[in-house]
Amino acid sequence: MADRPPAPDPAGPPDRYPGIPSWVKVLGVVAALVVLFIVFALVTGLGGPHGPQRHGAAVAVAGPSTAR
Amino acid sequence: MRLSPRLRKGALAFHLAVSVGWIGAVAAYLALDLTATMSTDPGTLRAAYLGMGLIAGAIIVPLAIATLVTGLVVSVGTKWGLARHWWVLISLALTVFATVVLLVEAGTIASYAAVAANPDATEAELRGLGSTLVHSVGGSLVLLVVLVLNIYKPAGLTPYGWRKQQQERRAARS
Image 1 (tube, chains in turn green, blue):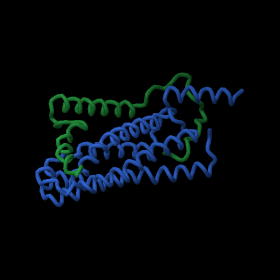
Image 2: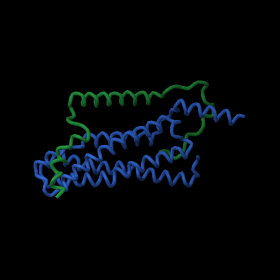
Image 3: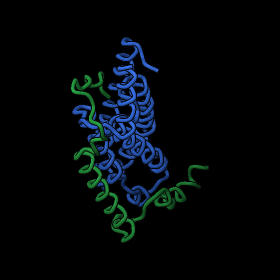
Image 4: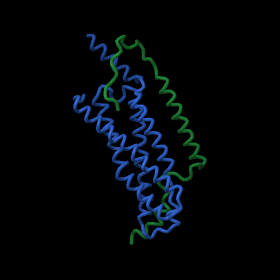
């Protein structure tokens, strides 16, 4: 987080919204590609089992002995 | 509500400490995660999973929550605002996303640590525990993106920020 906001533009703001900056668009495209890759990996099983259920077997194995 | 200069600096110092600490703690966690992924030695696996559980539960989760809270305070309490600048808004979204994934993943990590803490756990059970490497590497990248955004502060007002700026200019003129 920054310490100070930028100084106001002495020329004043433009009359219309100047639009989304190009760096935000690039970041959005990269984020969309990452999400697509994650969805692809989940659908095809590339990343293996996912979510809390993936360790269920290990917990079930540990259960009886920890209860002792 | 605007913070006084003294409060603003204090909040910013706290925010920097916990957010950079979060990245450092994830780096330490990554070393253990890599060890757990690559090792087959039961003793090493047990130590790695126990360490991962401790670091995630006692350090990373509190630092993540503290980062989110102090980030909100610093942005709302200054002229930057929460939704006026793209870099602040994206930083917030990424931090919320990283924190939610972390909180979900913390349950998995705690269960691995519970198995590792069980002296009766067999070698096969320890080797059968999974890896959280995808999440820890992905989380590190997300945190680095947020760090870069916070340092460079790329210019760009959101539509909301632009409207607020227009309103303030009009109010200042009248």
